[in-house]
Length: 133
Image (cartoon, rainbow, N blue to C red; front, side, top):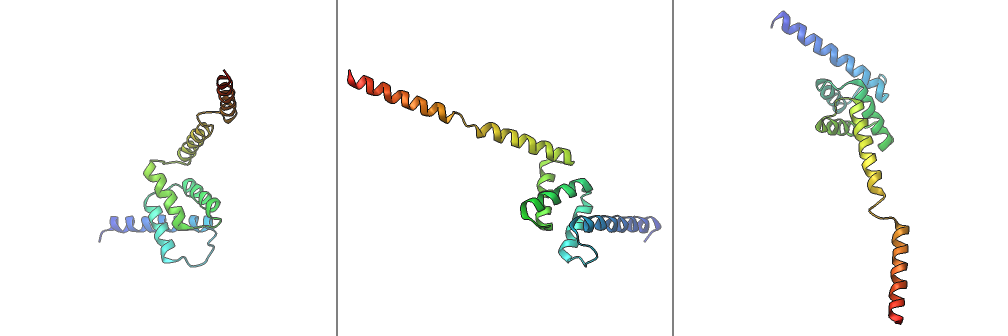
């Protein structure tokens, strides 16, 4: 109803159009018509001001895990990152590295299997020796 409102409306439409072009390029949609669901995801991500590098990383994660571009999967990845408080790709990569480090530290377990086996054999020999006496 006002000139300022019109400018704001046009700016938001231009932002969405530009963002849509970037997403189209990223997912390889080319010039095909987007589905209503795809448009919904793009609009949601645009409203959330998701940086292109985060969107690109979510796409990479999606394709690595599903072998195809899946906007619902990407949306879940992006939502999880947002809930965790990750704002940049560096945040996500740092958290992933921390997770890998913890996983590797725990993968070693609380004991060495070789040490366990040797201790079990030693216990068996001791028990056998004590049984002979």
